[in-house]
Length: 386
Ligand code: CU
Ligand code: CU
Image (cartoon, rainbow, N blue to C red; front, side):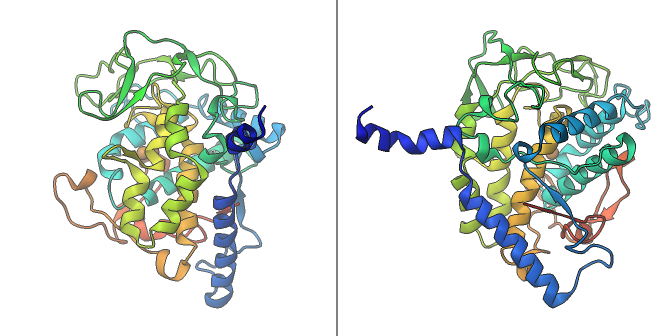
């Protein structure tokens, strides 16, 4: 290889093989340092949680094979336990895992594009971690999926390589007659994600037999039938395989280390940070949306039913970590900062969200105030990220 070619190709090779995350690693280290300084000066926000007994959430690829298998087994255990959601509300919810999917579906339009978005999903992901620990004997903590680690080559990453220590791989090749997925919708696409090499059922790795029961409500795959529930809420029992179409096209554009670090560094105010993090606007995908559409498929690409794919919780732990990093660059001014209203993208127009707003998780957790989700060392929480 010519010397110049090698130099030009080096960053790509480097990203593909080692996936550098220097910029966000530094932001995470700084967040932890600032948190230590802050608590040393102001004391701990809750009596019992300290940096000595705090839980540490780690990246999927940093866990040992044993730790990953323990996590996978706990997820499967949850899906083998009886549901708590009443059949009168969600007749299709058949197990404890479905309880989480149902709660998310139930509240979709009041927890996305809203002021409570990041707090609600923090609480939701934590409640899921607690269920794995308290109901399925899991001893670890919720791992996160650092998108930047796999942005250039997701199919060969520890998350999606299809091995028995992965979260299973891509779906089988299935194109049907669809050549792209429209974001936010196929009818009015702002972004067209070209079809990847999947699109069919996931048939490799630990979740190859994973059964999805609820939804879909807003499927991105045109060949996946909507849930038969005439109410349109997707509550009927609709057992089917899990499909994915893992999109390197998406992750390589919007999930790199620099995409995350610039989101944090360029936005000192909560409003632009909160707004850019989440969704899609004028050809741009925020890291939150990009993570969902890197996985894609059914239920992963469905705005309502996305928790039906178990990678949802690793993805949302990284969304939470991104917020945590942002908050703790300046804990004094940012910990309790809120932006946004109480309706999806403020449609219909509504009042601003406040720290006194209640959020609830149905059968999965008590109602708490948004205020109690703002610090990962207070309210019900006691964890940090590395
Ligand atoms: Cu959500
Ligand atoms: Cu999400």
